[in-house]
Image (cartoon, one colour):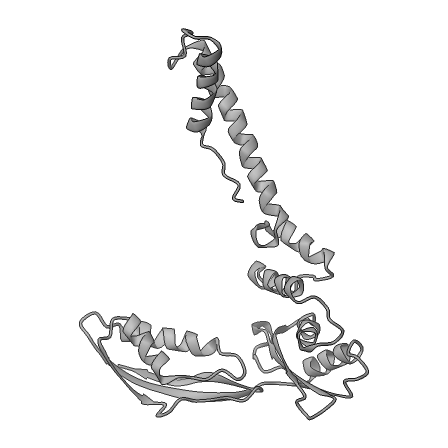
Length: 257
């Protein structure tokens, strides 16, 4: 149930109504003593309601302020990484709440990898090398200078997971993603068409891809249409581009006219 805060005017009206009910005929007009007292009380009540709403927001991680969000995470053993935003910390916390530790399933491997500093994303591939094996693909954050993790980061994640994984997982690999660079050539027409924004949106769209995600030509055309194109021709890629569970598609040369 939503916590609705009455406005100052609503509180004042309710208090004046109570006065009129208790003291029929009393002067409650603006400027009267009853009105002045009622306004002061309404102001105090309004402040209390605002504080109660703030308290209610702190109960839930997705509405909590930074300080209380960090406390929600700390209770569950999750600490903020350097350069991590509130949104990223909340995403990690919600992932923990929705998929709590479960004895070493695929989501546990993702959580374990994400606990390491400089890991911005992780993906688990069960049975990546056959029965009894697990592959974990990790992506480094921007502070490292590249989303491709260095050997040291791969080794750190491996050592951390190796100490936590169940003994039934005999074979573990921690891998960098393989980047598939894909060029885009697109032509659009329309009096309101904005090719510059289209190119920027296509780059942003492709930079958000995760391992295994397919690049659909229709989605590229749709981005142009959103930016005002009435007719679109996608020359490159000539077909939809698929990727494996360890590959990530990223933008190459983007030519949009």
